[in-house]
Image (cartoon, rainbow, N blue to C red; front, side, top):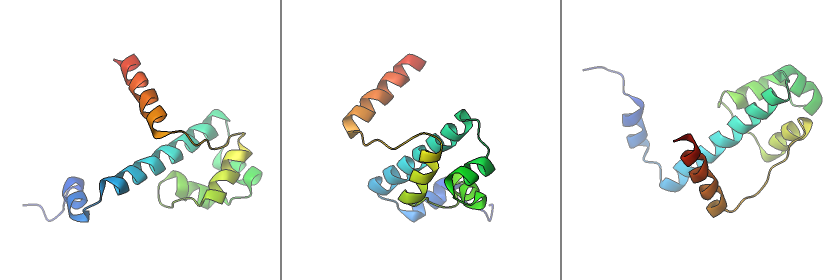
Amino acid sequence: MSKFKNWKDVKKELNFTPEEIEEMELEKEIIKATIDARKKANMTQQELSEKSGIIQPSIAKIENFVRTPQYTTLMKMLYAMGYTLSVVPLEEKIKKENKETEVRQ
């Protein structure tokens, strides 16, 4: 038997609530969208740093899921790339995801 645990076992032991899992998934989606926005803007982390005033190591930690960005940090990063956040009803988000899944199939 291995002395190392797999992620499934660790996850069970952590005993996250469904709400906590959803919150983590949402954070992951936001960070991924921010990375995608930076890449679409054809910017390096250093260029984003210079334009947003957020130091590059902090951007790297956010993009590597080491640090959760504060709202103000996220807004500075997005604004520097020409983006903003939008609050969307959960029902609308689910409909959009379902449509995207249907298109892929």
